[in-house]
Length: 186
Image 1 (cartoon, one colour):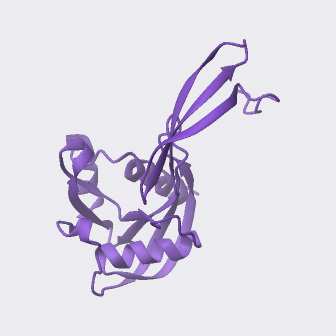
Image 2: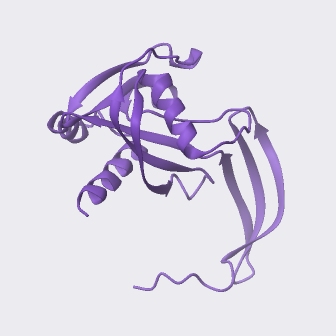
């Protein structure tokens, strides 16, 4: 299997225009040309990268659950978030912020596990995954949109059962769990 990238991009951008923008994302529509010369359009969602934190201790994880408007139901996931309004900063700082904001925990040890893309067919967004250990409890500082958020400690067996039952469907959480397993396997 070759992982070498082709020399010429498979898609060339001819023009680009913003069709929607808010403090969290920009949606643009690009006129494109393929290698064979045929043309079309490509919609792209531009979002800043986010940090996802796996708070682990005592054989399990601290998870958060909240109502997810796009899917119309509550869902469990690892704490995660991005800087709003185009702000930037170190991924480690963002990870520590999101962990404290959503769970109240502060971490003594933050281990980077990797960087992944999410929805790379439609979005530029990616995320940094961190393992948080040596946890110290504290107060949460959730954003207004997170007012219905709750958290719980799940053992690994409970986590797996929720994945199997369809209660955990967040792709970023599942991908981060895979990075954790690979980290533990080394």
